[in-house]
Image: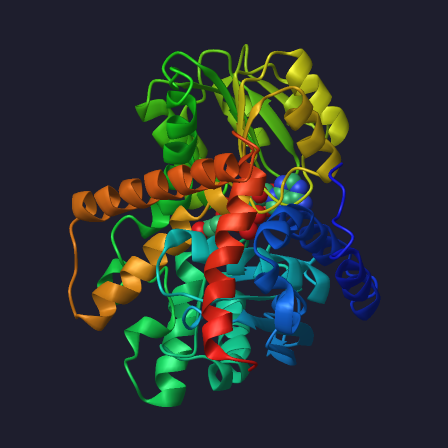
Length: 449
Ligand code: NDP
């Protein structure tokens, strides 16, 4: 575990006590503060005017009731959140998550990470995040629509194309964005395309946005491998999850010549030594919205489904955790290292626990932290905003080329920053410092606001 610089120790203590019980937010803040010791040693001005304290405090936190009526005519109540963390670089930008585990601490950790991630893209976007403890699993399409409409009925007062621009995350894909955009349009009587990203192509979405996070994470890891004279070609790859990020990570890894040997959902994981049949995974998860266990059942002999358990027991050269936070423990990391993993690329936000990151660091495994590796999603959201602002629509190739270039730049920025601060190949340090410096520069210019 890295030590916190003594100047920053009181700041972390204050964050922990002011945000009691918010475990994931503590974890995210600690990781960033651990990286900043080297920055304040080199540039003491960044520690002036309580700049770091201000970065750790969200600009605004909104919590609201979301009442809706289910198919049995019963009234249901959920809780909605939007944390507008930092707008020094541009309007707040970050996804909306619908999952029963959602609480303020989780939204704050995600919002905090988003601030630095968005800065790394070099695009003019601040950081925020939102969501609800609503569980979409097993809900009918009409129930999803009524929930989204009720959620937006409150949220619409707080967002706008120049204020705060939400997108999708766990449990929120194209369908949910469509229902929320429809309600926003109705309430405001404005076709304000730039208020949400991840929209469908028929009403202002961007080509390649759906694929962007997974493709981007794969581009990042490919570049990281390239710096060691390696590539995905012929590598065994394990990807956790089978949602938006996981599916498009698998698609790009396969395009780069890798073989996906396992993927998962929250019920368990499937192993297919012949290489996962991605078309079938898409059919099961995106069209039929079923459990991944179906894959083994349908494919038959030689395809294993393991309920519960850890997907990280499957030996691989590259691991791409793409499901959720803290899904890869220290024990999992030790198993991966024992089995010869060379690189880990986080498609999800903070999927590796601090213990796991430490195991990878000590074993010299190439490790790409989520805030850098999964930034392709939000970067392409910013490209969607650009297209909306200019009433334009780019081709898939044009958009993907921009994404690839952005991911390369983020990789190189993290690598160069890590070297500059005396820790070559430490992408965690590089990402935290490079993201921080961009936000800090803007905050200093804007005064104490
Ligand atoms: P989806 O809802 O599309 O997919 C999530 C996947 O992870 C599903 O397969 C789900 O399984 C599984 N999962 C969810 N919770 C758990 C859990 N507690 N334990 C095990 N598996 C779980 O979400 P996304 O693909 O959009 O998001 C995945 C991760 O990527 C999140 O960390 C998100 O914050 C991050 N991310 C997403 C971006 C995007 O553009 N969508 C951008 C940047 C980061 P099941 O089907 O059983 O629910």
